[in-house]
Amino acid sequence: MIQEISSKQNSKIKYCLKLHQQSFRDEEQKFLIEGDHLVEMALETNSILEIYTLKQRKVIPDNIPQYIVNEDVLRKIAFSMNPQGIVAVCKMKKEQPIKSNKILLLNDVSDPGNLGTIFRSALAFGYQDILLTNKCCSAYNEKAIQASQGALFKLNLLKKFDLNSLKKNGYQIIATEIKGSVTLNSFKPNNKHVLILGNESRGVNQELLEISDVRVRIEINEIESLNVGVAAGIVMHEFSK
Amino acid sequence: MIQEISSKQNSKIKYCLKLHQQSFRDEEQKFLIEGDHLVEMALETNSILEIYTLKQRKVIPDNIPQYIVNEDVLRKIAFSMNPQGIVAVCKMKKEQPIKSNKILLLNDVSDPGNLGTIFRSALAFGYQDILLTNKCCSAYNEKAIQASQGALFKLNLLKKFDLNSLKKNGYQIIATEIKGSVTLNSFKPNNKHVLILGNESRGVNQELLEISDVRVRIEINEIESLNVGVAAGIVMHEFSK
Image 1 (tube, rainbow over the protein chains, first blue to last red):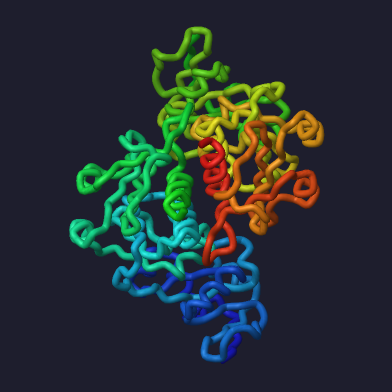
Image 2 (image 1 turned 120 degrees about the vertical axis):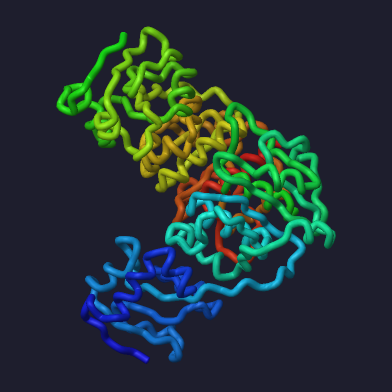
């Protein structure tokens, strides 16, 4: 279905604008993406509900409504100044049961750029189930989506989880900590594990540290800590060997 | 020396404001930092010329002028909404001769957050000489400074360098490339090397690839590439073993 919309007052355009608010995104379980690369990734995973574009795109399946809009309207609904002529409304994925051996737990990661970057690395290194504590920033924040480079669509994000029961089910619980007693380079994880990364300033919280079987640190010099996105990448790369 | 400034029209305040422009920073070879952590790092390396603060700070050496300002004035000269009550004018470090065996070359890294994050990791993993090609974003961009967490002060940044002469002097030139023929996990660098990381979209340019002795790739799945800050962290960690 292809249709033209020229007015910013159109109810569909107003709906898209409301999706700029996190609360409305959560309520509707929908979010916006923009740019060719993200749209491509979203198409692969059947995440797109409708598309707003400057000119008809032939690669879009017929069952996805395409709305042709002018530059003014597109800029209005886009987050960035350069949405590459395309914005799409996507549906959030429902939480799926955990099915992988390697799980990532993000404990209150608050910067959306960091969160998205971690998603990108997680997919790259085979961590498909991602547990998020309550104070993590939203995975559907526009900066997180951008930084994830579409990895978001291929991950299973869970906000409800029980770490103790995962532990009982044989998952080794590994916290990363600046003062961890075990160095990353001397440590080999069990095949089945939960890797925990913490908040940018506070690190992994006490409760999670106490449940952990081991606290691992990356050996560094001259500086207190690494960026959490970098730390996550280094540990996941190491554990994927 | 301690002095009060209450007017935004004061010439010193106006000077600070002009330091918000990259061109003026380059001209004056000065830049602004804010917050306790950065000021502490800058003090350690004698980089601070003067300090603007809400109330007198006793830890500041006597030879550094302290200007006591009100919240309005401080907010005016700060970049962020929360400068933690302190802003300082710092001097840029002069380029020093290369003295380390491990050198990092950043080829047109354009995002200031990525650049700063890479500085932070570089210091952590012992890369103290950093070569920057012309189209890298400024190391003194406020976001780069923030992301570097002060690592900037302890690094030797060079914009003028001759890779061919480094190569002749026995440095192994290692480019990271998505399609690199050698995997990171199978590669051991010479002790003396230059590690090249490329632009966020285009990677390492052809000219640099051709000078390189080896092109290394990080083995990843499901996604085209990693964030350049993460990739840099992973490779530097690996090479620091």
